[in-house]
Image (cartoon, helix red, strand yellow):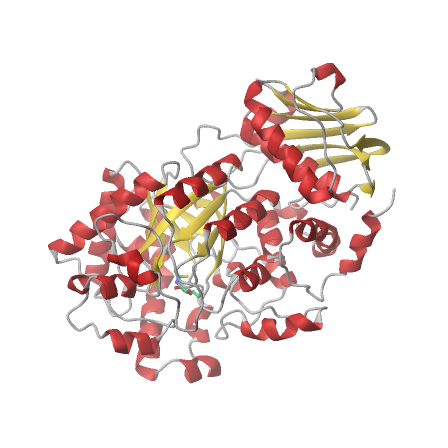
Length: 551
Ligand code: TNX
């Protein structure tokens, strides 16, 4: 391990010379198209490392660092193809790039601006990890050729259980970009809140402005907030994929518009069931349901113009008849198609009629049923409800096969290792985090260590997914029932997000805990420089980050 890169690149050759870059060292771009990207790179390096590189428009021959778009490249062409699908329309669907540090300068090259951005991110990490004094950094020579394993490398963020405002979402986008993740799936609606403005149905967000039961922030995004987040993501090659969760998880809808609620809906009883599981679903046999669904999806599509997919949820429709659930999903997916988009849904959505361009998001591992028989579950969930949950989850074993038989691909998000709202399994090296560790994360889940989550192959575990052709990509998820604010959120995200980045980007052959934990310890300097919160896992020797100081 010579370079603290996460995710680890496909091909790396380490040299034995070095290069010094200094404050003011210039960057040139081969086309004006790359100028904004280079400006952002200068800002990122300054934030990560305190080093202020020079202007981007100097003539190429003078520049120490050169960013080049190329129209063809034999070495890049020979790299393994990326699997899966992209979350955006995919005009720039090529992330291949090269990064070369020689004794005389640095070259980053790619076939598209997005490829260049990924290469610049590698360079950012090299600079952050270089030997440094006040205004210079010494880099070892190296040559890297790289491309991702999967085109969809995402995080699902629950902004419904706890509202995370635009500034916090921008911090998450920055975290994703640093780790070469490229999709932010925003879970915008749930029982506890509705965070996206819909002009014909204003009470959705009005009611959600109120703080949560335990005093945590309520709120919603304005149209301008969403526009600026989409733009912020686009500038960092992170596509925001919106989710409206239906027909279950709709208590916030029923509270705002009782005419959409089931006849038996009892708001007080639902509140008592709390975050664990609310029973009650939108009714596919009522016209008003479809007026609502169509208007919501139409506005959401317009707010997120660069997402190819609209996520319609489809999960945990507890108590709904199977036929009604399938009918609901099929009709909602058809509306998405009418809007010119592809549908994504949680794995239960595979029970409806989908098109082969649609996505199904695997999450229900067989262990979930066992977990519901655990002591913790017996203590937490009323018996009648628990039976209903078991019955619902048992049906899930056929979902992946059902999705594949319709040609739909699978986004892989196994609960046991890619749900970040699991309690951490190992202590923190920092006493002051131990209380937080017992509070944050769903207590129903057995805890998982950083190492276990990193080493598990998320795809191998999915029954019914026989070839990689069926995989759309990999997504982690952070649900926020136990997350009371930014602090808790970042505590769960880092360092787990780094592991996600590597699992989704790097070839399986690059996955190795000992090497990874050493790289992780060094990358943490960037999180600190950014002021991001993170969990100090006792499985990592964080002090090894000291080796980066002093030239
Ligand atoms: C299951 S994942 C849910 C969420 C919870 C999560 C907690 C999914 C589609 N549904 O509503 O927040 O478990 O980990």
